[in-house]
Length: 101
Image (cartoon, rainbow, N blue to C red; front, side):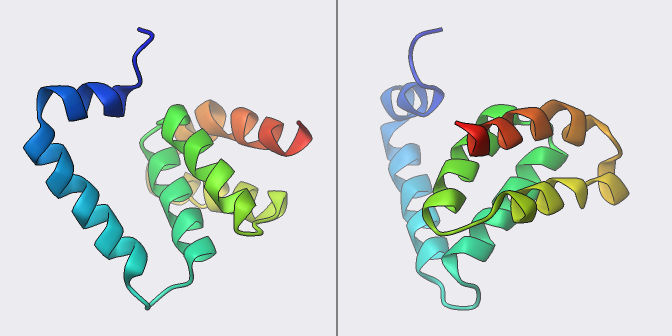
């Protein structure tokens, strides 16, 4: 599939996608955690789901916010205690590669 999955979402359900985008913006704007920490949490949550595509997206954002490779690796490794090895083996290689490019 050539089309970005979020583009499909926006095309097929524009009202819902707009509401979802608003929710995301509200979460980003909340002040309880700094932006880098939020990205590391997203990385861990998405790794727990084995969602390598989302992990790669959030690693890029985390890097721009100053996240180090070790922080990203730790965020992914923390998922071991919750969901086992699946997220680590499916997401860690791609995340590490992003720091080597």
